[in-house]
Image 1 (cartoon, rainbow, N blue to C red):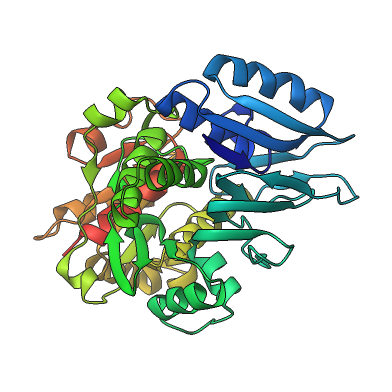
Image 2: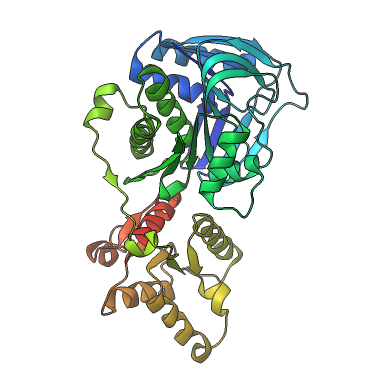
Length: 407
């Protein structure tokens, strides 16, 4: 039996349009129950009446137990898209901590309160990139602790802002008395620290990327494989990465048979990337209206957040007559590794940049994001081997993957 403690929240996304009640803990409980079978999971969480009605129905479907702490108001997240900063609606007050005594616990950080845990094994995801709480700060106790954090959370918890990520992992293991430290690094996979040794878990490429909840899936499956099946931390993280790819691909929870038969495509970084070279993405797209400028800023920021360099004609060259901007723009294409094109509106300059990138003696990989254009208008791009996507988050990830793999 695995005990999951954490938030059950409403999550609304505009693009693609979704409206779900899961949150980190609800999603983890459902995912483990789908994989392991009924009566293998129990869930502790704060629930208002609306959330309670839905999550109890979900629990009945998947076969897990809900132990709610009743509250007046729950928490809701509203995303414009899967990579956007959400609007968060939460109660003003902080609720009394949830107390749990169990053998094997997954603890997620929560917005509306905390959880005091007494257990033998725990996997802890603080869910806070600004001020992550240490596991034992609130009086929680554990014999065997595994920390799972993204890179920003790890740096903030260790308070080592300019250190190598391996030094961050070592510091966390000592400071937090953690047996295992796993640091998720997005397209670069995950770093696993255990028994003084490091290993790296590969990421996988998928045709579709459903980002909201993907981190919860990694935590859920790592926890099950490590605490319940007794896999090594590396092997547990490897299986969790594969399960996360399955979720991103079809936004569904894998069954045991489904995960065993799933064969995702591994992301294979180029030797240059492994040697420390930071690849550059050329950001092609119109920037003549406020909406177009917003889209350019959004894509640039998300590509930068993935550790890539970005050449943006708007930011790196600026506006002006053809004799001032065309030469530097074309130089930018030649020296970049990948071209990411925002094609909605069929801007002539963007279409030209795509053709130029492909006509070079050593053509560039081209990723096209086009949500509203017809197949007929996109025929030449599709037929010439561009990676096409109608989904913004998927397109960003495809660009990052192509850049990481480019020699």
